Length: 169
Image (cartoon, rainbow, N blue to C red; front, top):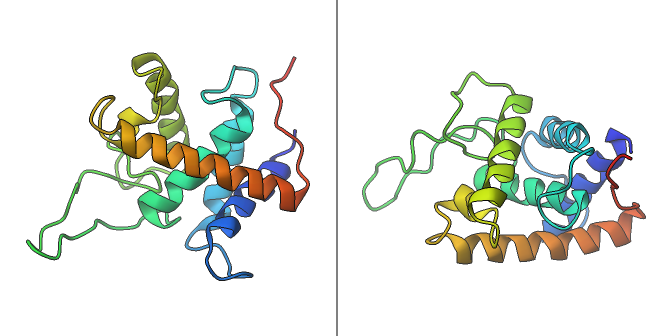
């Protein structure tokens, strides 16, 4: 499996998310897509967290869109009622808490994927719930996002003629 195929898949997911056909993926899409491809390939010898490596890539792409609008340094969301930053500790495309603002896109991707893998151990019924808040309190949000990521994956695979990413022998 080549990184270019995974990048094409990730762009296909972001394109499928767009309400305007032909619209360019937002933000720092090339660097984030390349980081996703690198992390998926680095972990191709292991079993995927979700049902397939394609699903893992789709989840990473979807979370990057929802958490940062596909930006490496999105800034922090400010609550319009209070004027205060919400979650000022969160950093990077996936808005994680373990790395600082000086981390690279690949550092953020590796960190998010490591937490994703940990989520499978901590919360096997909903591996992305811990990354969305907590195993129990954020399960509905995480499961809804996973369902949407899978729907987008189907669309991206259909339009891009991409084969599934298989684990290395």
